[in-house]
Length: 388
Image (cartoon, rainbow, N blue to C red):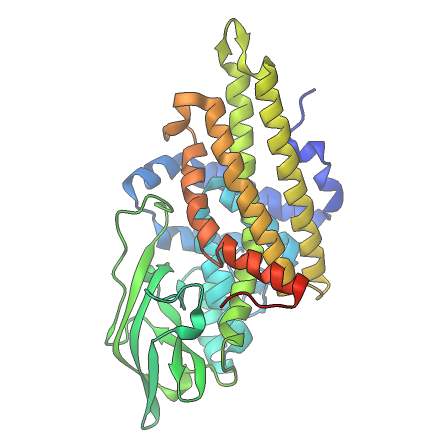
């Protein structure tokens, strides 16, 4: 009897009932609500973000790993499994959830005032308000310490000026968490997007993450009250803590795109006949599927291990880099190899593999490039920082 890749590794044995239930609930939602529309959304580069946010809020996955304020308070591992199932549909869908929950909501939950939490988190958990996270700038991605967006005290408030780039959810967001240089170091601000001087033009002509909203943020003298600033945190500790949360979701999420690619390739190879035999019966096809499933399973074992460490309060940022580097790198290699099994059919949107491969090019870059994560791991091993 043929086995799916994760069945071969008996992954379910490592999960508890609540985690399996959450995984299966998200998988069912993805199969019925999302997958039938993805090819059209990707081809037209549009996505009904507000409608989906409400659906995802009802599903309980927005900020699901946070406690209180309408959030579900699940385990980190359950959140990771939800990310995997979302990305098995499309990286853009998982990005919507990651940015909402692990960047914008987590920033407010971790660093915000009680007033900020009560104002935004319940609505964001329900999908009634969408958030974005403004850290990356046109000239500062891997080196966020150099960001140029500036916040200046003005009377009893602040004035923000600057630009952010490659911001998921930006054009549909109701609130933006924006990080800016101040005389007191880098600080975070909660910015309602209807504030005068704020605009978020959408980035067009993307070849990747087309079923996702990507924007620039323009802050042209945005005036905010003093209550808009995160009260305590200063420096890069604030934004980097949020990025660690989002990277953790990617450790699981990328495997969803890889799994969907392998399952598609197996189904195609079993149906496709060549030289009077199923493509799946050829040694080279089986060798490809065996090697890819091995890497997928190893990545999943690593992800579950990191999830258990996170749930125990023992996960270190260097370990998140291990997971992000390995699992995204392997996922994109798997998607590319699966495409070869489908031949010419693999380049069409009739199958998801090329869409996954294109999306993973973005996932390979955001939340820390592979090169940056290599240097993080290298620093952990040697004690020497090679970033400069």
